[in-house]
Length: 587
Image 1 (cartoon, rainbow, N blue to C red):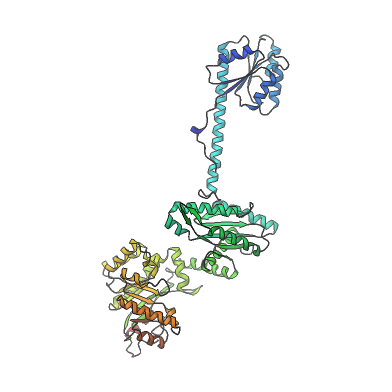
Image 2: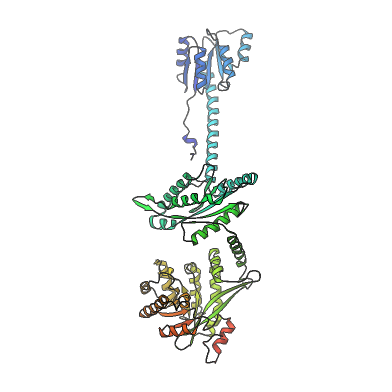
């Protein structure tokens, strides 16, 4: 990378003057006369020697004797004017001929700027030399300034188009270069591959070793990638730990396999850092032009979608874009657009699934479940729209809306507990906690009535901020429930460190009660939770056999379609008001 040279950093150049005269005494005399002027005086005793010096030096002025043997001053002047390197050097003739007008005209016609007559007048010589030195100095400084500005402009242009850390083309430049690749491929009716690489485990390097180590790792991996692609292929840092590689002139996708494997191996090999080894990997998504897109945005979107397939496949691997993936991508885009206006269009609804006591069937409360129905897209499952709401940040507004929608039921049935799901993103957002505080302070929420359901990974962070939030919620009378228990770490020991009142056994284990391992796991969870004074809710209960098993194991509460499907607010009230003996059976 080039370096901008500031004006103060430019080396000062001493002007050079060449004196060409065949009399050595004249040369020495001129050097003495000019010693008080800041110039470097160079001398030549004949025309040939003078021309050699003029060709290689950046001269401010030549003092040229007219009358010299072999090659006189007029001949030297003619040769100086014929060469590009010397044509612009000003020269002054030194001459003893004072009177001939024809002589002077010949001198000026040959390019001379002036005449200085012999014997030399020191003051005239010094005055004229100073004038030309000043003119040369001004010209030289202007030239240096132009060079400095040109260098600065090139540096600025380079920095605007390259990543400062890896020196790879940045997103702006790689996208511009891809446009050119598309145009060439279109003309030649050829195809090329776009690779979207995302480093697996890079965040862990930053967290464990610091950002300096992360920067070092990125720079090293970038060099490996560059060394393993062809000179005419493209590579750029797309952002963070993401890279784009464009492999041109690909005749078929099968020939990409060795290169993809090689790039992943490059990312997997450890990088040495201060006595430690930095390790990561890479998930790679591949899109082909023109099959998977004909524009830059289409190709990158396709490769990006394929990269997520690689991550879902276990990471450190690659996947190609597919038509089914294209359909999923289009649906995701449609959902992202529709969800922005779903609340204002009243497309969301909260349903309440009852939770009952396992031994008596008494209704203890309900879980608030969010449902979305769109006129164009139909009914959309939470597992599909919740990730989109989280990625857009809309989840915060949505979560608070669910809570406020549930408040009327909470007011009408103050003895029941109502639970809402809170993702890690919501839990760590200050806005949710402030909402809880406002509702309790305003007597809009009864302490002990609200239960928030979170997943185990939030507790396992062991962050001070997490502990402080939990303590605040506990002080507000909000209870904590661990959702989908059994699918994550399931290390009951950490529950002793946190104020957990309840855990919910994931429905997938209830559905597989016939499997001995699942049954054993459920028995163990219930026994250990009770030893820690934690209530257990079994969700996904769908059969009487499941209910009876859970009752035998002293499970505290049941939830599922065998008890009731999720109900509207009105239907939930009707469910509560029912006098039927089978109130806990399916509606």
